[in-house]
Length: 153
Length: 156
Image 1: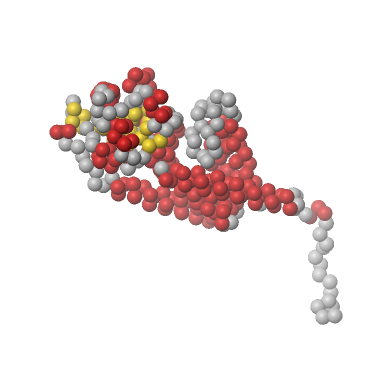
Image 2: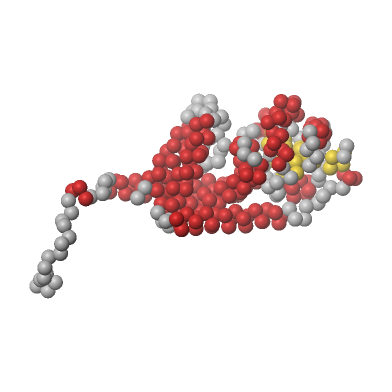
């Protein structure tokens, strides 16, 4: 067994990981920052294009506030489930993770669902001011054929 | 006769005790089998993750309990390490080293599976996600078998 082979394997892996991270970051370079005109209660509202751009950034965390059943049936790829009804109970365990995120995108089913707004307000109250709302939510994302997955919480 | 004259060499004749243990063909064959099994499993697992890297990074963040930046770094690095090691095993380059790296990785995954028995499988592998209510031992058993394969490949 050669030490140099270990080094080679790790260097090659790190180089590829670095390159892929740069590519992800590059996609996010032209991110559109929402203006105050597209905000509710001081919380920015995201369009589909903005949500899509933020989705490409690994530092963004998507939160699905729909029920666990809806979430398991299908959700935005990479999103975590934090149902509005369980917000208080599960906030404590999630908070360290949420604090580390560069941006948090909260979404629900569609514009008609107010859970994303109330959840985002509560996140802001918890000091997580990087929270934003994607008001058109799951329905628009899914209709546009964007990355989705199912199962798991 | 040319080449047969001169003094005999001092090299002693091999004895039964000098033969390496497990010198039989089955032992070599088992290493080859383990090598290809690991190569297939890890190449497919890596490709699955790399094609949806965003989801895998989030999965690591939500499941590991590690600090955010550490989970982010691990989530971004791990699939490429799996790809490199899988490629090495498939091509027969640095196989022992790749086998040992994967064995260390699998030991960690086995420890995680043992401490989280009965929880839903992460679906990070190409194996079917069996119902953890009835087959609660599956993730641990699968990781244990793969760990044995890794150790066998790392063993000379």
